[in-house]
Length: 373
Image (cartoon, rainbow, N blue to C red; front, side, top):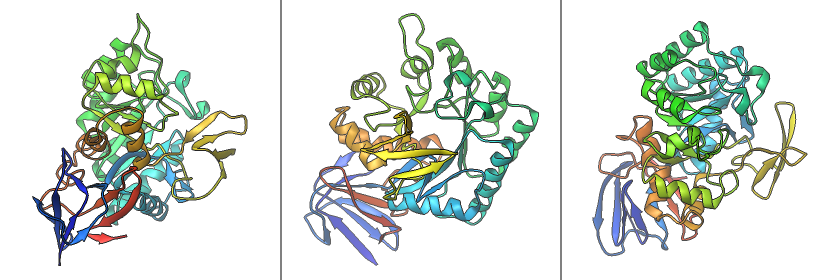
């Protein structure tokens, strides 16, 4: 079956095209051509590739934790498909060795079952710096040992993608080299480290930084730190663009320095895709109020964000071009995980997973292999 979509600008993963139509046949993109309105005529907005989110802690009322199994992972992924994602990395925050093993086993089972939207796993800890623990449990943060390394190397063989967030305080340069050589995407985060040390870990194989500016020291005149290493180099970095975790001026400064390499993450919790206003997570009561997740004392306890909202913040508050904001939610994260040939672009031969964003950058419709959901 041939479908043609017109009436909206089309973002192909690189650029925004006006007065073009997206052509889909049998669930695949077959072309983007200049044409008059015809077929399914949309009322403005933008057609774009479905998003790629590399930091998803939960969704649909479920957190990725030590209770994980393939079914729970599938439910998290299904929630994010309905929020506009082609695929996500379900993310485990610092937990016990037993929980980590269980999540890895569940992820391998999900990969073997070809769970829709499951791209692999992101392990955010436990090998972090207690000085920058953020919302992580300091009692569970620990140095990486030989058993941890063996577990990660085996997981890398069985998962389509494995990303791990680590800090120099808990992981050596040689351990980073081994992980990178095995195809693990090493991301630096939750780290109280110097600029020079961060650069040494990049040279050892680290490819990304986790939630730029958050859980890392601020830039100072004499010590730029990890954030400075990101802004002064080529290290990719996720950013939580809710206007809360990173202020609009800081977003503008970062985007002015780094024309490429920064990508959007939701860093969302189990609240994603639900109307829940509070939840017990990890023995703590989390409240959802006005776009914030907080503890009862008002301390931030996570992000309440989806990627279409992050795109709006980048356009309206960070003041970057729409095409640049869309790149950050699609082709940049796809390239970081080595999936640029299957995700993040609308091009002939690609699966037709795409979204329609209205003129206010709100997700209004989505298609999965050419079928509207």
